[in-house]
Length: 560
Image (tube, rainbow, N blue to C red):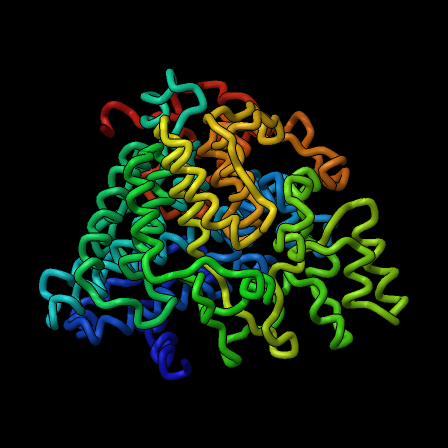
């Protein structure tokens, strides 16, 4: 693995990707990358491709102060988890992820140390580098299959990044009220760049949600076609045909294309097996597991010390070393209402420990540590033990970006959504559940969902989504599903939320049309992009209701 990533730092230097110390946000690599030979042939192009993937789990997308919560893809997913209803932060800790959890980041867009800058900077740097590979595709030398392998991945990366940018910087693609759908697609989203850009390239205006997703679908479809005739993954960090279909399934669920989501999710399952009890309770920290489709392998000389995702999630493993990390002072716990949806026979019960069980497993004989832990989780609920270090002394543990279980649950949902196929959807759901709970059965039907995520209807669609919530807890980004489902969130003390995280009326997340879920564009983008006007292009800083002038949220007719 050391040899595999040998050229990553060289890529960062050669492409001169944005330094976290720059005053202006850089969304381009540089105008000096062309002509270096880096993209001349498929073999050489693996170097910048591997560099893009290395950036996906690198710290430093924001500046000093919040680097620990700006750790690439897994951090960005955890951000969406703690903004939701199922991944509960039991305490403030040092503040990392806490401000996401309590919706207190929108007004901080002028600072490059906060979430808006982190996400915008990170995804646009990935896009800028992918654009260089895509542009080189027509002249790239090598076996056609190898060229498809490299260029197809670049298209998939670009599709993924624009999909994620839209998920954070615009309202959902699907309007909660179908009558509002046409206007929703006209709402402003993010600028779209599809060509190599340099230091002097003018910035672009915001495209509409509809325009962004037209590009996303075009890119992911191109990726799937190219990767179908390309080799399989050289490493699980790479996107191959199966993973590209997995990304397509996510995108299609977001846009309500149920038939395409079903096809893509089913294609993504090939070559992988649903994890058994031993596999899924071993710490979720190894790409070698046959259920892991895509992720990052973390090796000893790539750990930056305190800060990567497991320091935030695994609050227990380091206790044996006499060390307490951030996950201990700010434990991640499960929504008690969701926990109650599992049978006692469900093997996933082991993913969360009651305070007493956590003390017995990790703090037996250490009364002082146990007392500190009890204070942190006082009156809350079960702390997560799903994600653990593979080697706590070295801070090691691979990062999961996609598991095959998600694909089965996506297929089941897509089938159910199409109507008249409840038995088929039940059968696909059971493929996962037979590995999770020997007592599980499902004879539910229908697609009814409550207005709030805890308004239970008893439908089959809801049951599939419940199992998805349990299965993907802490790894997918719960808010992404909440947004596309057109539901609101209600947090309660009975669910285990601490009082400080009970969102009050000024931060309304009960309404699926809320602007609380839409981040503000970083000030650095307005400072560096002459085609954005902060007075009309900034997302509303309000957390409830509509902007005073609704016209500012739409792309103008001239822009169309």
